[in-house]
Length: 258
Ligand code: CO8
Image 1 (tube, rainbow, N blue to C red):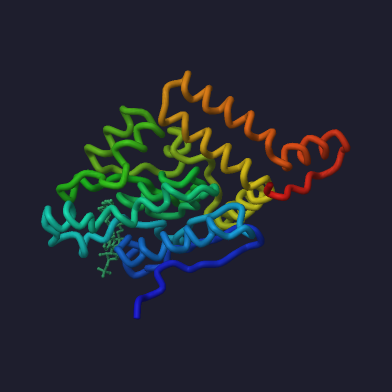
Image 2: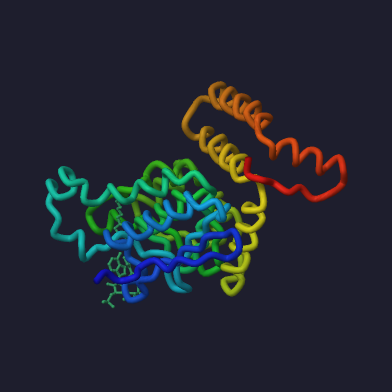
């Protein structure tokens, strides 16, 4: 029987996923990534959920991919079977907003998993790093691509080449995380933030997410055109009518996710 490496809970309209492999500092093995992917897809398909939070423990969000599992892999294991890779792509396909609530270590694949989320809230205990070079490999789940986009080339290059960690304050200054929160408040704050998002129109939140992500995938001209078209599409929703009517009528909007 497989172990329960991902705890699945709901808090109102928020889906909460807690990485749960404490003895290995939440090292991301294949089973954990399969369970995480399945839980993410289930929340994405669930109309009662408007936003998802991924968190870990006080000591570690995740200390990376499982080194013990990887150490004997051959090139053909990783290339032909895509043993590592397959279940790392699921998070990228989730349409609803996903927040990473990071306390303790977010290293290697753990840092990459956090960066795949739509934004990162960090406890003051958080430590980010891409230490793969110390193991004789390079980041393999987007670290060399997302870290420079988040913190710029100089800092990303230094981190990837030396493997040094960045604390929460540095990560906030560099733009890797949206906010730093006292560790004991992290989960409450993440749930509150996710609850705010889950109270918006889900289709419009998805449009907003797609549009911001487009900024990293296209030229400014193409990105602005994409945003304009999606802005136009908002006017095809009932929620746009409700949102603007509620403002004019000085009441709270009740979105129907339509
Ligand atoms: N994999 C497996 N086990 C781990 C990992 C890991 N990444 N990290 C920690 N553990 C285990 C330790 O082996 C130890 O187990 P045991 O008690 O059985 O000996 C337990 O967790 C506790 O760890 P420590 O005793 O080392 O705890 P410390 O507090 O002394 O140190 C550190 C904490 C600094 C986080 C330390 O554990 C460490 O350096 N860990 C490794 C960090 C690392 O190198 N991460 C990168 C891994 S490579 C990677 O992520 C590539 C991703 C590619 C993804 C590609 C997808 C397509």
